[in-house]
Length: 370
Ligand SMILES: C[S@@+](CC[C@H](N)C(=O)[O-])C[C@H]1O[C@@H](n2cnc3c(N)ncnc32)[C@H](O)[C@@H]1O
Image 1 (cartoon, rainbow, N blue to C red):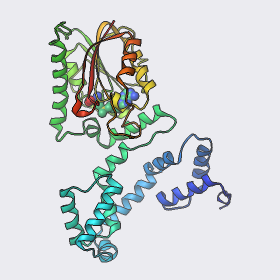
Image 2: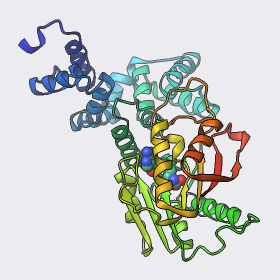
Image 3: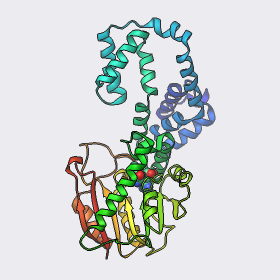
Image 4: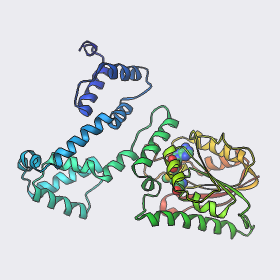
């Protein structure tokens, strides 16, 4: 094909990507389009990989592959007969695949399950690999590890939308074991937070039912719903339209809630000096840019009334040394940096709480607008 004859390295990388993912040579339209994006540095090879992995074509290929893997006669012909691993070899294979795909050591349950399965079903390495790739754990890791492009605002939107579609509740509250536990966790968090504020000797927020509250990064309403039960109005802002749409669907008869999709950095749809209270939990810790967090503080200061309160959680220390920043592992702010941001935006610190057990990621502040 003439458009592939040049020695262009980018073109060759693109071609390899097509062969690897879509199992075919690139068509002219796709090739020209992606090559242009690569040349102009509008997209990287890893973005294009993501796009191809998200394409209908790849999904159809994958479905066919899974169907054929699940097809008994196919297994008998191609997979069962190709492998007869010993228990030791099966375990070695598992250790290798766990490290490569799941980024961890194999646990005792996994070891028992997989070695029995490999031995009984005489699975080949290729088949075990495929099954681990289909596992929810691998799929979730893939969505957590999405890398950043030059357009961080767009990344946040795309990545959180994908997470919302895949399993919103998991990415919001990774520990949850049941639907009930998920919603209960929100109620408990909000009631503990309100009690904490109300029990402060300065008598903050004694009567909330006439007040207006705002949540930044409200997700599907885990905390916004209980907030709405305590306040006259409850507004939720989120960068992900998919999160918001699930939140809207489940809102039931809660009429005093308003959800807004924003651009991931400001609150331009909200008027000045409107809210008495602003809340943000499990959100700033995911934002990959200090400037965006700073901008949120300036915006929150704009929309919160004088003497209004702002309660938030933030990551003040790194969880893992050298962990790279993305839309899951957001930036870490030092106490000094946070204090500066707080002062510059016309807030005063009332209380700061840290939980050393979580190495700073659960740092919470209660501020008051001056
Ligand atoms: C872990 S979830 C927590 C949701 C909610 N705060 C809760 O605790 O139930 C993080 C939420 O923040 C949203 N988010 C991430 N980055 C954001 C940004 N820059 N601006 C607004 N929302 C953001 C995500 O879409 C997601 O809904």
